[in-house]
Image 1 (cartoon, rainbow, N blue to C red):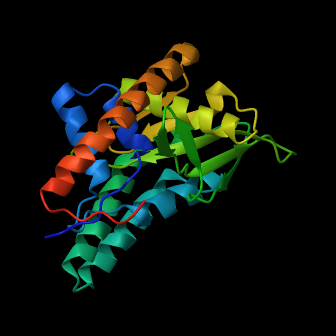
Image 2: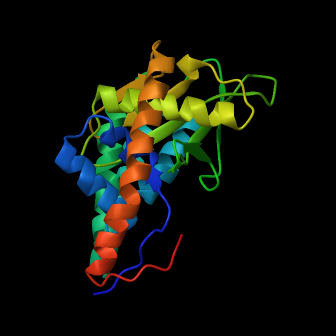
Length: 240
């Protein structure tokens, strides 16, 4: 079946974080998957994401509320006849159940958390457009100053380790800086929901940014060749 191809280098934040520690063969696969997004329906965690954003933004919400929300999602799954929707609801319920035990450790202190638009938050680095899409913005109390953000990662089959999450947090920090904010390293979080790991920006941020730039340059260099290879296989490309 023909599929659309992305003409210009573009990576999601979580995938570029994975790329940073991947084997050469896995790196090639990651680039191909970004050039040619999967045609088949994939599990999404948007229901869990909405619940967790509310959890971060409302200090009165407790871990018990997360478990109650998970139970409600399971009830909705039991009443659905759409198999894909059922899988998404159950996966979101599992995510909330996994997150609940360590949720209080993750909740940022001494800041005001607000939901933020996930569209348009991109970072250009080394010839690659990184789609950052943070989930929660963190504001300095009593001001509109954005000092950080939270990025959530959902995947039972491909968890991100501490090293990958540190790179993800670094990208969040750089994205906020690029938008004209003055982010605080300790306020830029990346969280793997299932693995129950949270990382902030490490001290060696300059070295990590240089590593990210080098990796993006590598992606930008390989992209046209892999794109042409896919075209030669009969895959049609017509989107950016």
